[in-house]
Length: 531
Image (cartoon, rainbow, N blue to C red; front, side):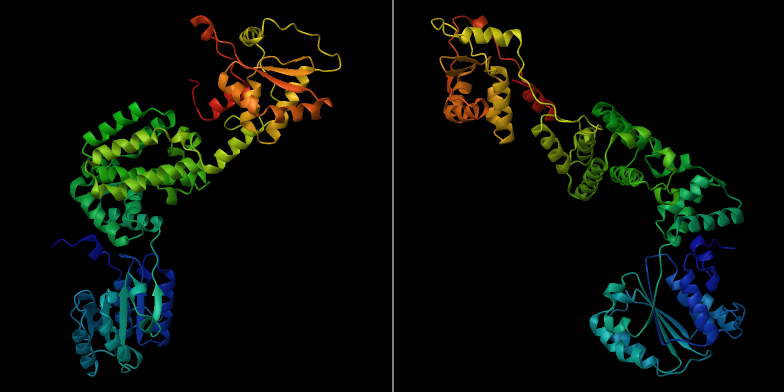
């Protein structure tokens, strides 16, 4: 006996055998059992989900000589056998992709005038009907609207939106759905049992998942795998023969991304490509991995959706990245897949992607950046994963170097006068700085924070500076500073900005002002350096 491919051997013969199309099967059975047969049907849906098979079953059911009470064909009479074998004179199958012209449709219009030879109905099954030209559809329109009572049209298409509305409105439309992974897996298990092939559930689940809802694709992939596997199918053998990356390798690579180690990630990538995995295949599997991580981050843990148990995914990867970071990584991988066809070197493009993904932790959303800047304005930047604390007022840092500079900038011929007892110059300094912060005068507040110790002499507030540029800017704002001082103290005190004196030796010039808390916070937020 000659070999028959699984997709042909397992083609459903009755409505009850249609996989995953319960609504369609039930509706068609009720129509045939009650004798309410429409003159035109439109079956739409993805490839490999049973549209053409359902059309043949319907043709058998309405022409069956001994129909079953539930509406299924008997599959034993001469009419059922002829239709199943494809040699019935009254069931004509037409490929819409190769018969697109108006002349082909005119031939159908001439043929429908003749009654069926041996059956109750003459059935025209037109597959991929959306490929017909507009003129062909127009020529068919009148025939579909008012056909002879013995004619039934069954149209099948994967792109129903290309079928004109005038045609759709004259047909009973049934939409076929993608078949669930568990249903495909059970069908594959049945084939393995019938063929005495040993296969683990992981293998069958992987095949069902790769079929993406198409039972015919699952059967075709199963035949391919069974051809090189023999009587026992293993997932390891599939990965080796078909050039797959493998879930474990992708998990290891993602952990390198979590660690921020581009070196380790590139080494793993080199091992994967050296094993013969194509760049496109690697990108495809990496896309699926990030998609699953994104689903887990959104609390989706169904195995039939993920393709694996959620426990199989690295906890380090799940906890290391935010939803936004995973979305950005997924966008980068998808963009690479689109760019590969025009790439000068696919491997170089892939290595560039891996190095970028090794810095995923640095991906920051605009909303998160705004939150950090708002926290910076308030004087505090919350650590990652910590709730913001109460605002902490900034106080000037008075260390030895700052005091030393303040002493150096004091003119030698000026004698310090005792400060009035009622004036707390430190409090004044802090209040002035805080006032400018509230008015969003961030630069001015920062410049005042870097000044030396303030003092009151001869009815003036002396503000010593350690940098010429700083002194210049503060002199320009002296009147504004004086107004704030007056509001704070209730006294009209002039503001005098002391410029730094030139240093005679290199060691004195090397002395730098102390870093203020505000500058330190800016450095931490933006990961910068003080130069």
